[in-house]
Amino acid sequence: MGILEKRRKMRESVIRKSLEWVSSLPFKLTAILIGSYARGDFNLWSDVDILLISREFKGNPVERLMSIDFPAGFQVIPLTEKEFKILLKRREPLILEAKEKGVILRDDLKLFSKDSNEN
Image 1 (tube, rainbow, N blue to C red):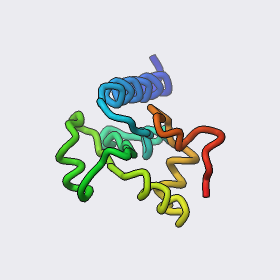
Image 2: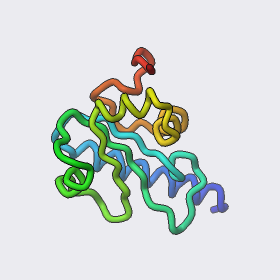
Image 3: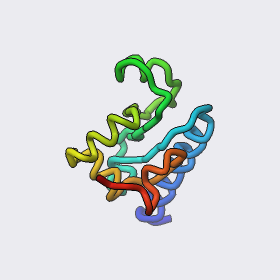
Image 4: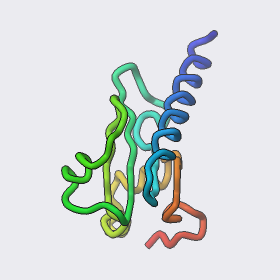
């Protein structure tokens, strides 16, 4: 197996593992794989970056992280829907990257659907 095929399989495995995890979360959310695995430029030290957006989140981001049981090697960024929309309006690079290059894992909130309002 060539190096490109190995990398493709590694990325597919990460996407599959991410899908399984976000599918197990028992609340409505939008989950987007972002960063190097979404772009395809990951390396051996890359973590799995996932943007989680939910109306259910309470408290500050640290409290939100402590309430979520996520797999080792995952870096989760928990945002409320309101925070996401503010960051989108400000055209924050993280949100723009999610919109342009992110891999949609789950979109219960329809934030990434074709008919979602971008501004």
